[in-house]
Image (cartoon, rainbow, N blue to C red; front, side, top):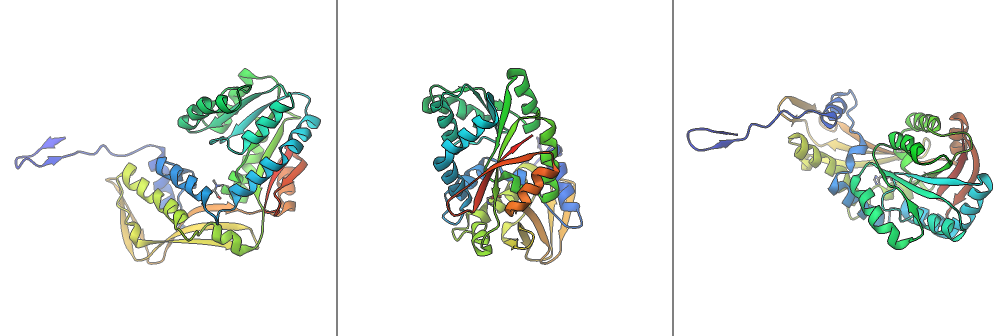
Length: 328
Ligand code: AVI
């Protein structure tokens, strides 16, 4: 900080660097501008996502809750048939409100297992370690805070048993099909033969229902998208004016790609930190997120081409969402 003669205080901002900065600049400099949706989840993004999950139009959470609350006995029985003993690992455990049904059922069945929730957020793991024992006193658990694959490897230092990996919430949909393929291939490398994966897929359905889920009337999903621009302003010293962009979700019923864009409403320049200036043309799209929807057959194909065997599928009453059980 420098004080100049008229007593104005100038804050010399440290140049912003780091992975977040580099990935933002890379995305905004690409011929088709994009931002990585993994950056949606700062504290405000987490809060907005909680609100999205409560939204009447956002059916995904209710569907998967329906599967877990109504069919945990069936899921637990299927797991027991597939593996005589196992531990449960959850990728992106969040608040475990869905998986708790399965954990409770496994305990009721007398299954001898340890639960390893993995999350990138230290807060989430701390919260789970405080809250879960009160709800499930008999649960043995060990929370792991970090990247999925690093933490999956760490599980091996605690457990020699087969793994049942939970990857719920339709998170696989936030990869485009090629990236989902690569994710499954890489995940397979961290698993051993006989390990199981229970993963959520949002299924193709009436396109209007899908589009409404990403364009709720209360504008929460809109705010969720804009929050990433606000985050870039705060953390990287940028000057995005969100009033000069419009939220534009799309759904292609042929490919199942539900994509969200922010459209620049005018020709404009945005400064990122001290050194970067990004030019937008009028109506130029900024691609924010994909939420890929699948046909049942496409999920089987994904399993088979990445070295998994589809073993069972659990759908909600409306058949809008599926938790698929695959075996490595
Ligand atoms: C986290 N993920 C599964 C959500 C989805 O449906 O793609 C994220 C989300 N984006 C907008 N609404 C919800």
